[in-house]
Length: 86
Image 1 (tube, rainbow, N blue to C red):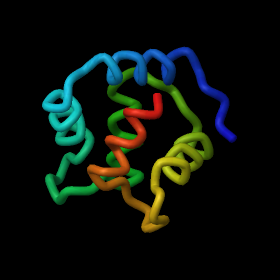
Image 2 (image 1 turned 135 degrees about the vertical axis):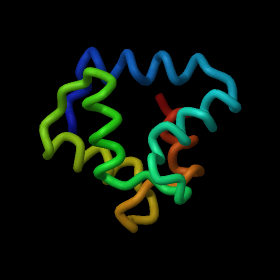
Image 3 (image 1 turned 180 degrees about the vertical axis):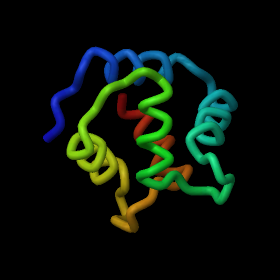
């Protein structure tokens, strides 16, 4: 299990305070290539650019926790579930 860092908690707190359109826009920011899913590389890229420092192992564990269907990608529904659970 990944230890939640202050940055990760802050990220979730900020995202939870947004409305659904802002969550959709946040998904678009994560989904750099616009293909409708967030890959591990896109997830890592976003975290680095938000100034959040996680190890590869931590990011992989976060991806596994969010990726409910186990396909290695986060779709919009999984993203919304992640944001709602925060």
